[in-house]
Image (cartoon, rainbow, N blue to C red; front, side, top):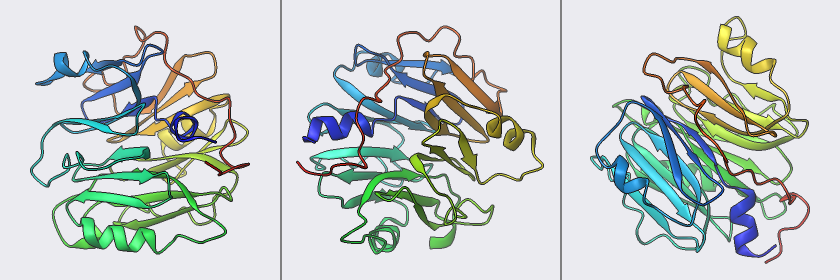
Length: 268
């Protein structure tokens, strides 16, 4: 696969944040729902976007050429991504942002970046490379409380490092995963059969709702809520919706990338 196809396959076309959600349209632009924020009009003028990630007052967008666009809060250096190149997968948490380049190396900027970058890159294996990354939320404190970072490996298994106070890193037993997303204090995985797994409490309403989903082609975990994109372009959601962040009924022509299999061939 060439680098553009890899970016298409790993694109996060929907993203659940805290007070709002975002989606990439088929025209390569960004749509929003929920609370408005400073800079929204600028982001809606972005073009050639393949992937979007939002959290708090941060928006990160991956362009077709492997470079990134960023806008929003930068108190922990979360948006210091201008020098990153050849990126194929992105995600931003509350206090850190992650990116995966075409060589399979993970880049992290923000709170606890060095320690998390070393920890997650140690999960690389020559015969089982990392093919996608996700950044979770976090809270002030030491490394273990600096959010969490999740990585999807080529054999459909998942690894995670960082804050595990809510069990958000309990992903080692997951199998047949083709996409991942990390929220403020939970992680979700998309299985090959279109169903979704979550680290949330099995007795919670969100767990029960998410476990009933099917025909899902993209997922995103946010602040106490989760979004799923079905193959017909409709959005399903579970969890928190106080600020209308799940009001996605007016979204249309959401980009769906599902034509290639990243697990079959990792050649350039």
